[in-house]
Image 1 (tube, rainbow, N blue to C red):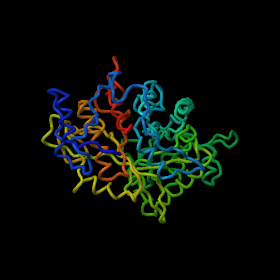
Image 2: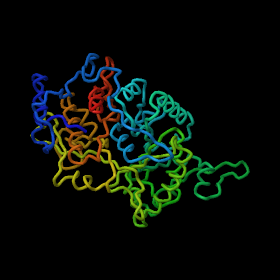
Image 3: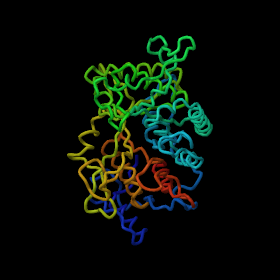
Image 4: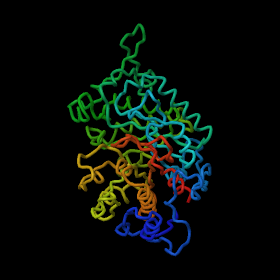
Length: 454
């Protein structure tokens, strides 16, 4: 990615345009070598009004100017094509859900589709999932509605990849989900019935998914557990979800906190449970996935290497920023390189695989507005922190973050914030252009489009 300017000059430019609005002092950021001369007269961006249709940076209806390759053929994807997709990744939580079905009570609407097409998103992350509430898998309306959305979207952009997610939580709701015959067959098992004569299939069993010795039971709240991937019923449950998502049209699946899910015996057994699951998923993808490919990722340093083979396609991490304590009023924050989460867990530690950095959501700290030594940013989760910034400083951060990765570790990509739950009213962040009567649209659509048009 071309880096246009030194951030200090960029911030000064913004300050002049913004009048008396306080803008972050970016001089304390880690230096970004290789930037162009501050005398360069090219437009520095980040100053446009997202609601102004005359905005010269990103006029409405103009597609991004770059034309990377998104070709997937023969059931394979090249590293170049994978990087191209990840360079246009955006989190659009539960876009494929609807008013009735969804964890967060928001869902993709017509304006969200317009935004995604306008900015040129190619990897649409976390587009469908459930955090618990497993019995809703029994609703064919949910799956049919999601499939229809995918098909309609692909009429306008056939290259786009939608990502589903399966997470590190299972609740007793899973006891309501019947196990289809094809799941038993995939695992080499005879279908099991609760009524042989009526051929009524049995349901998944929470007690066969949780750790049998009680580890991580009630981890999230009563009636929940962290699923134990070493147990066959857990593998069957994950397989069921992933195949259902591929049938909807998803070509990528996020596998959550893999270390936690494997901590009850699988990691000490060479990840045999994950190996069996992923081998079966890859096999199913040849006929179930739209182009014969399913991209798998997780929160796991170095990916998942089993017997010398990498079982993931890329990895994902939260931002894990550090507060700039002299900028409390503007909630200033930045990446740290030396002696930091980023250095210790990410840079140079992905086995050469590409990775995404996402604006994570994980709730409030109870110390909002205060710098802490934990994973919160000024007491907020990462997407809520970003939503708290004023528009100018938010643009400064998006410029800074993309430039930071381009300089320090170009195999990494910022997963842009599109739609995600936040911890204050209106309860959801949308990057969409602002519009009268909508308080959940934060106006970063034009900025994202500008960054992706370079």
